[in-house]
Length: 311
Ligand code: ING
Image (cartoon, rainbow, N blue to C red; front, side, top):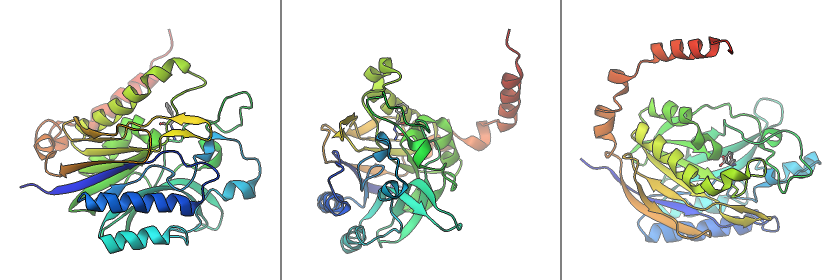
């Protein structure tokens, strides 16, 4: 049996600070219409798909910082995207920066939602692995102040039923951590959506620059294969506010193979017919967690490794 979902990875070019949310939503809707015309049932947008990636610069004023966040979803500016999705009968994944007051205090998260083909939000995720640092580094060519601007996500890594299968999300730096995939893999995930904003250059470790695309792909290919799941990796790419970001959006099969990839660093759809049953033979054999995983031993190894005294 094959459960085919046609997926559109909607890579975006830069969103400059001067562009409004309405400008960004217009681009998202254009990509959605094109994806629908190509037969897609779901379109996957990048991390922070409504604004420039503002953690790349220092914002001292709290009111100015809050302007980069969404207080509600859908909001006035994003309602047209939900309306278009409902009209076209296409689902979507959207990364955005969330201002939350539900616990009685203001909290800021780097967030992503999954919306089904009826326009209903079926799941929300808040980024767990926040890279970068807390304090502004004036001498750096650009910042990564995610640890300053966001709290660590409090929703864990969750999988939901949608598009005829089991889907999950992670955001950007999460894709570099095998635990992100395994927690979803233990929920029998069949497709993971992951948006990213990844600079080409790393001021603290310039020797890593040449391997940016390699590390991007190997992270998602390993996660896909080792958990027998599709991974849809989607970039916000190009030079955004002076920071050149990698492109290289990919659709990775549960076999670990890249079946489709972007060829520009602009707005571009990467479309593939994804068989959600392709991972089944791996889940039943090589990655049959019930038969082969030994978590009781991992605890012992971790304790022993931690306990080894320095020479
Ligand atoms: N960006 C980058 C990412 O993880 C990074 C930051 C790049 C960290 C390379 C370490 C190595 O792709 C975000 N937004 O997480």
